[in-house]
Structures are given as structure tokens and as C-alpha cells.
Length: 476
Ligand code: FAD
Image (cartoon, rainbow, N blue to C red; front, side, top):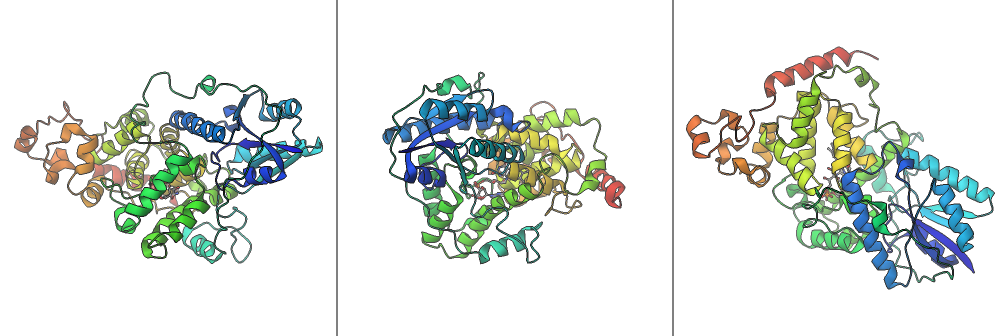
């Protein structure tokens, strides 16, 4: 009987797992997770991602145990060497996995596939992370898309994604090499900054389904209106589950279409957001330098503020003195997630008003987001900086006070995350520096003592950013 090592990576689920289903159809399966963060360098998972990974692997272990299968956790000098060792120890004939699209991973996986096949081992990769491969959606002239709207139209013209696969019947092989203990991977932080994560998240396939079900039952209706409001639970919260492949976009697509209202405008709006994730992967595949290098290369010469370190530290700590920004940064630190509207607002302040390079914001998000994803994060930062393929124009500098007044009009979001401003009236909560002295006194706010003065003058820094942009605007 054929034995296949099913190499789990960011596809930590049993339903709709094409590699697992193909392996199970061929014979016995041995699920394997290989820990090799150095091979993803410089984008090895950050602290919040490691926290998620630990709990997601634990959940997968439990799920597999219910099917009387172990999850073999292995480490080694390289993934190739580890796979070779496991093949020797188990007599496996084949390895199967679902494809990922981070440039370093593509390169490694292609090499592994070639070498294993040369050595007479079956090596097959499958499509499990996306609705469509980055090379399946093409412009009429065969090229790839740079802007979202035509990409989305083209995606909608494709045949609907196939129905998701069920959990296959799985046979275990006789040989079971020893496994590394999950705790020995040391994914959890030594200093417990993760306590705020536990009440918010349930990593694993069951947690993903719980999120999707709650979203479809309670939030799909009205999604298009509510998705921009940070103080209401208007979005799905599925991003970390999608990143770790605990649920597939095909499952989300099908469940959304099958739900009441699945053909309405809210469903269309939600699925278009899922398509932004596809677009991020499309861009990363076609612009593999996207995480480090601006797609609009004029921005390589952008005059950043040479004294940006202090500003960066205040931004990271949620101490800029601009309430909506501080609320977003503190939500990120405490929960590992930040609302999309806030990601744009804090990104604009950092890269435009403070003129700190977008790569430094990207790196902070990489370390602190539970959904940190190379494709979506780098696309998001290039978008907000204005240097990406389909980016906001540079001169669109978000005014955080206006953004707060518009999307958090009663200040509920700021009050939740910046309790030192809790009793300021809504009228002043987004710009306490403009509040009359008696209002501040009544709210027990002393600027510079209980809450910082704004780190930057929003109007002057906006103008400085636009002036800086002029210096690169006409370059090649
Ligand atoms: P929902 O509104 O419920 O959307 C459903 C799914 O669609 C999400 O789970 C996500 O997979 C996808 N999606 C939604 N919006 C976007 C978007 N703008 N771009 C790409 N995919 C999207 N998303 C990440 O998953 N990882 C990141 O590292 C990341 N970094 C970002 C950095 C910046 C500067 C910006 C502006 C955005 C970033 N995003 C990132 C996109 C977006 O903010 C999150 O996907 C979204 O907030 C996740 O919340 P949700 O699951 O409730 O979204």
C-alpha cells in the first residue's frame, strides 16, 4: 500500500484539504508538520503568528487524534533533509502538500519537488489556499492585473469555485517515527504579552467555522454598511483563520452563497474582500519583491524623516496623542488584530505625517498581527503609502481627526482602547488638544501628563509630506 507524508504548512484543516484528500485516496497517510522558520527568512513568522501557530497545531493534533492519526512534528537542518529522514524511517513513497505563494517558500518547494522526484519519491503540490492560482486569472493579452477592479471582474467571470471536499477516510501507516513535542518548538512567548489574545481568538478549524457561522447568521446582512465601523463587530474576523488555512476561501465562498442573502449586495461586498486577499497573492506572485521594495520605484528615493525613530516608538506604543491612532495601535497590541479602517489610518499617519518608511510599519504589523500575511500586509502598506500596484494616490493623506469623527462618531472605539479619555465628550474625543480647558479638567485629562500632546501638527506635516512627494514625482 502507498504511504504518503502529508506535509501540513498553512493548511491546518481536515475539510477541503486537497493534499490530504489526494493522499488518502492513494493509501495510508502520515500527517507531518516541519518547523523550519529560517527557510522563510527574513519573513519568518512574528511573535503573534507563533502564538497562533502553537494553538492551531494543538487543535490539529486533537482533530487528527479523533481519526486515530498522529501529527508528526519534526525539525531538522533543512526541510528537505527532514523529509528524507521521515521517508527513510516510514518507507513512504510520496509527499503531498498545498501550495503557498511567499517567494522564499516557492523557491524552496520547487527545489524539494524536483529533488524528491529525482530520488524516485512522488511529490505533488495542490491548490488549497486560493480560489484561483495567480496564473489562472489573466488579462486578455495574457498579462497579469495591477488593479483590483478588473481583477475582480475577471474572477467573477470564472466558473464558480468547486464544492469543498469532505474530510476523507484516512488509514494510518504502520510505522510512526517519534515526534517532537509541540512545546519544544517554543512558539509561545516567554513573557506573557499574549493574555489579551485568549479571550478573543480560538485558533483551529472549529474556531474558524464558529467565526464563519456567527458572521453569516448575524453580520452578513448589513456588512457593506457596517464593515467600516471599528466600534461594532461588523466584519468576520476570519483573517488569521484564512492565513493559517484553518478554513479555505472556497469553503467561505460556498457557505456565503448558500446562506440566506447569499446572492445579495452584502454577500457580494464580503466576497469582494475575500477577493482582495486573492489579489494580494496575485500581486505577490507577480511582484515577488513587494514586501521590501516599492512597486512604484520612484519611492525608493523618497525623503523619509531621518529622525523617525522616536515617532515610530510612540506610534508602536499607542502614545501619539492622536486618539483614533492610539486606539488602533493598542487594539493591535492587546488582541493581535486591528480593524481595516484603522490599519489605513495608522498607516497613513506613520508614512505620511511622520514620514517613517512604510517597511517599518509593515515589520511592526508582521510581528504583532495574528493575521500577519506576506501578501496582504505588503499590499496594504504599499497601498497606504501610495507606491503599490493599485494604490491610493499619494496626495490622499488621511486626516485622523476627520476619520475618527466619521467612523467613530460617539467615540466608543476610542473610549474602549484609550481609557484615559473615557469621560471626554464625543465632541472633543478625537482632538483633545482643541478642547476648552474646563472640558479637559472636568474629564480629568491633563495633556502631557495623563495623555500625550499630539506628536505632530497634522496640517503642517501633511503639507511637508506633499512637498516631499514633489521631489520624487517627476523621477523615472
Ligand atoms: P472581513 O471584512 O471579514 O473580510 C474577509 C476576508 O477578506 C478577510 O479575512 C481577509 O482575508 C480578506 N480581506 C479583507 N480586507 C482585505 C484587504 N484590504 N486586503 C486583503 N485581504 C482582505 N490582512 C491580512 O489578512 N493580513 C495582513 O497582514 C494584513 N495587513 C494589512 C496591512 C495594512 C496596512 C492594511 C491597510 C490592510 C491589511 N490587511 C491585512 C487587510 C485587512 O485589514 C484585513 O484582512 C481585515 O481587517 C481582516 O479582518 P476581517 O477578517 O474581519 O475582514
